[in-house]
Image (cartoon, rainbow, N blue to C red):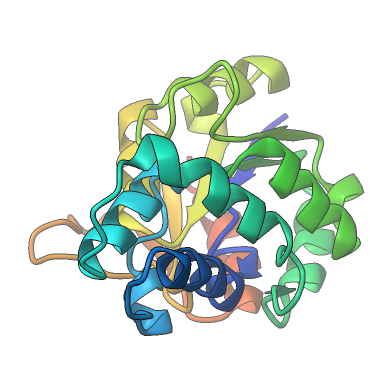
Amino acid sequence: MSLIVFDLDGTLIDSQRDLADAANALIAERGGRPLPVDAIAGMVGEGAALLVTRALTAAGVAETVDRALPRFLELYDERLLKTTRLYDGIGEAIDELRADAPLAVLTNKPIRATQRILEGLGVAPKFRWMIGGDGPFARKPDPAGLRHLMVQAHVDSSQTVMVGDSAIDLATARAAGVRICLARYGFGFKFKPGELRGDESFADTPADIVCAVRTIRSST
């Protein structure tokens, strides 16, 4: 047995336009100026509360996250699948990999939104487990969710591969002691000098994930 764990936003799905539109709708309601899509995309990855905090701060809107977060979630819920799509080739990649090992999703997005998106895109049944950021486990980069998935799959860190696009995913994998394949095509792929240490694998397209993950698994 082994286990392959996927991040969601920026790895499986391109959701940046819907996230940005929801954040900008919130900003506009509060009298602020909309932010560029790529600026908001750079704020994604550590949960909705931090996204809202960062977006409001960047837009110069003075409001507490406790007041703004519920409204953001409402606005995003209205837009979950307006433009969000699977990255080209992801469907084929996960079909190939699920023949090798069970698949899971580990995301900081709320689980209800995660399930609705993956169901709407027709791939939810391909993942045996899904963990969202509003469940019983601390959000990434805390490794608790990833470790729980390993327990569920009856595997250890040497039998597990994580696939993600961001520094948060990298930190999560390192904290759990598992190898990682980083998706360079994802909108979260932004690393500072020194963050990469040379033992990471990379995928420039979703199709590359299959080869990268299989190479990792064969080398352990």
